[in-house]
Length: 298
Image 1 (cartoon, rainbow, N blue to C red):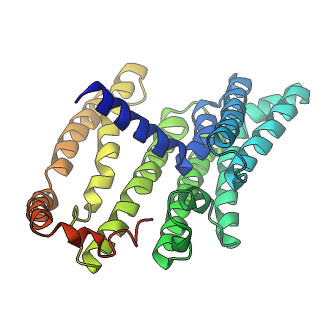
Image 2: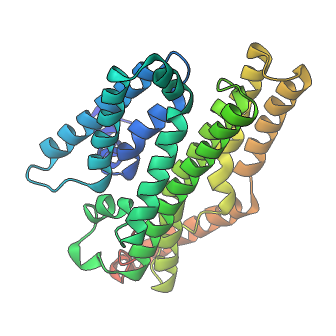
């Protein structure tokens, strides 16, 4: 790939990332992963800095654009947490170190559910910037954003429950499984669903309108990163003593085998055949690509 082409591709990926709801959730992800005893100020400081930078980038990239629900929630929540941390007593500060992770996870779950309740799922504001205005009321477009917002709400709900089990049941906020492994796994799944489900809807729209294009991605493709995640988890178990040696080895082996298995599914073979056939149809009738192909792009 030439340098100019690589720079164009890299710029396109960066632009898509900045336009996605994932950028708005990055402060919450940082808080969820970093917070713990002795790290409250660090976690809140990084989360607040990310929230402010996101707002600035949004205004620079789109001067005069309106603020998004998630952008405002990011800045307000983490600014309040930072102020409370500054003036909190020693006892309150210790409490925040233990439970602020659960508080932030529950807060984002509430934002997700609240935005859906008022019929403006927070991912919708990001998605509308990437599609024509006439698409904004498309049922498929709206449904996709409800599902993606719900997926993120569910991920942070799982993270909150996991953290609470570590704090309240195990009395160990640093527990490898409840404090890190489960919470990160939930975020990975939400990230994958954010990418996978729109591709499914686009493929179904192309099929409905008989437009050539890539086939619908299989469900298994959504779990490939999660399978790969088992490998570093196994390594951490072996190095940090997060479980018996056999468990660490088993996680690594299962991660490798499962990743290879998911990458070699029957659907992949069918997809290759479909793409081959699509290429032929595009060569024969390039005008077909104009028949409603973009109408279902989430």
